[in-house]
Image 1 (cartoon, rainbow, N blue to C red):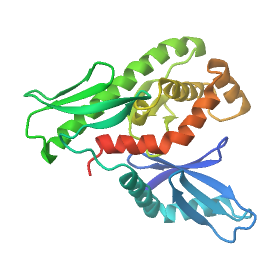
Image 2 (image 1 turned 180 degrees about the horizontal axis):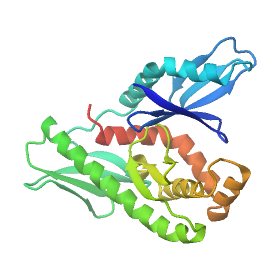
Image 3 (image 1 turned 180 degrees about the vertical axis):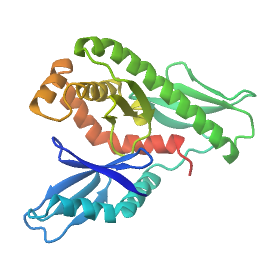
Image 4 (image 1 turned 90 degrees about the vertical axis):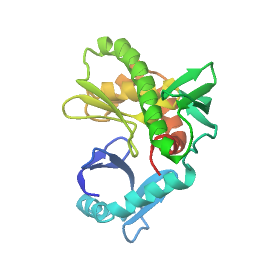
Length: 259
């Protein structure tokens, strides 16, 4: 994989590796007084690069570029180990907007997906329910989750854009490696599809966070003051995403990614 850009997220001390296919990997940087060399580690909490305090930033960037393929492979292995793929025809539990739903399979001539009552999500597909139906099932799930998140985002934009006096030029929803959202140079917002699985309050925090970047492109005190003025409980939601984020992204991979 070729990485085309690296930037530093000031407030959280992360390096963001933007890939040529639009994905972004977030790496926590940490200068350690007893470190004798650069070291890259990957755990369930994410990626981390540690180094001696005297290390020049350019050396850190070069080190990450050199180990980019290894980093991508290790992150993918974590997803595979923690979230095995869904099995055709076998019911399973999934999160949706912060609530647990039972995903079930139903025989039918016309493929579709719908909520049945308060706790069931029904996938209707022609029999036999085997591996060949997985592509259709994943496509249905992907479209369903996109529709869910776009509905919620539309409501949030209607609520907060007039108050901010600024609007994004567009909203894209896709699966991201590590980030929950981003704002590009053309003021277009990208949101992680995994937020469709999270509680609405977590999605609200991410949307407000990115909208506030329309005013301030950094993570300065004035930026966080603006976030807090729009959503006083933002810290609680940020901590929730830090604690549960990896599991949520792994669950999304289980549902929509091919084996």
